[in-house]
Image 1 (cartoon, rainbow over the protein chains, first blue to last red):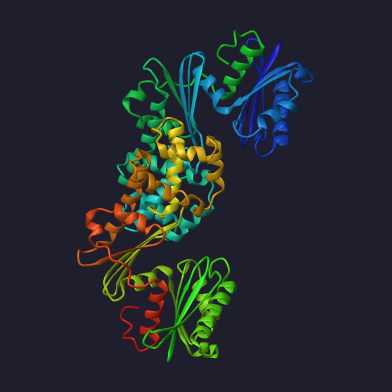
Image 2: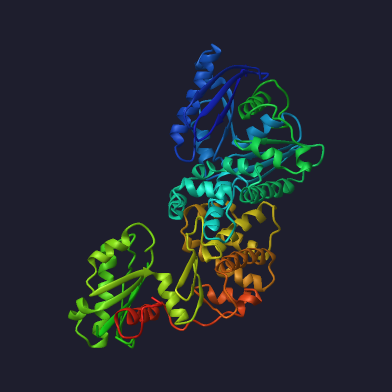
Length: 294
Length: 294
């Protein structure tokens, strides 16, 4: 194949990059959400639209789509039979559908061994050593995603109620949260009952801000989150020559709080997830090398 | 007034007891749910129906309802304006609407100072010293109710996922839970996303069973719950001459795990919540004494 596509699809948008057989990006496109769990047909539409826009951006004829190989990294590929259903309706010459975490790992690590920790609203951990892959976490807000923003925010609201009841000491942070809810604990309870993970996650940056100022409640919530993250990293059993890339919206805030052992492994990601998908597509369908690392 | 009513209304049923002015119970009645938050008119209907059945049970004329004073202990009285709306449509001669926890406290402690801890699906703590009352917790499953059955069950499912990911060691209990979900972690996640507090709470008894057998995961979950319960009790600042009554579906399972300091304060409740409502009604509207403790 002369051309390959990398595609990064998530709950808010879908991005595509058209590249040469060796992985050199020629054009990019962006469209709407590509959540195969909630809207398979809509996801297929936005995937193809992002690909078409990448062809246009590159000045190439989108009629070549059926002759182009594509690697797609999508959220929700581990659930149900959605991945197989999607494969049956994709228009590309050849398609590989993988998790969003896997293309992020390939982008971040390039050819190196190591691990990624994606700390955003949720949390998920993934490592690669040679051809061996391990994935940890990513189970969602209610029972998992420990160390992620939504869990940090939920913990903060719980601490605020504990402080309100004099069970734990109050702090400038718990007082500030209480004030946001008009000083009425029942408003916090109402918020908690009606909120989605992203709403809880909106409180997470406050915890980092106040922890740096020495706030005791913030430090307790943050220490719990960092402990949860490091317990997950421990389970990946990284050796000292492996790289660790922190990704996701909270990565910059989390990094300084990791213990020295993990800070020593930190590397900036080589590329983003879309770059990872392009590199995988070039290896698998182009001329960029063997498929050992796909 | 010659007759008084005690009424205990909750999410599954409403119970009423008709008593003499001195608090001697003459008859009882039971009807459907009395949740003033979800169905005010339905709650009013079941409250009156339970009262009517208590009159019938006592061989008295229910036409006397408008001349009878009633104390009602109801869930959800602390939220919104429901209590005021209910008061306006109740048919009793005089009515006092209080929380379900307050009538439980009056029933359990009688004339003594002390505290109650209601540990069921949720958790709430309440103390009385002379005329001073303090209420702690009861904020619901998402951000509160620490030490209650739903939080214990949620914790167990989280531990099961952590064990599945090799983040924490597995144990006979986490393996048993995993088997209940066909060995598929995604089924646990699905359960967590679609379950109500009572569904999580159904897992709590397993934790107590396995903790006694020495299961490490069970002991860790239980230790956290007991610590949460004792932190709430600490905030009530009980003195060594005060009574502590454990109420709620998990009280019998929790009691043996409390520290010696709190086990020494434990007393069996003098009466149930309905008995507490009757005693309050007799004091307030009858001849059973001053209203000091109402």
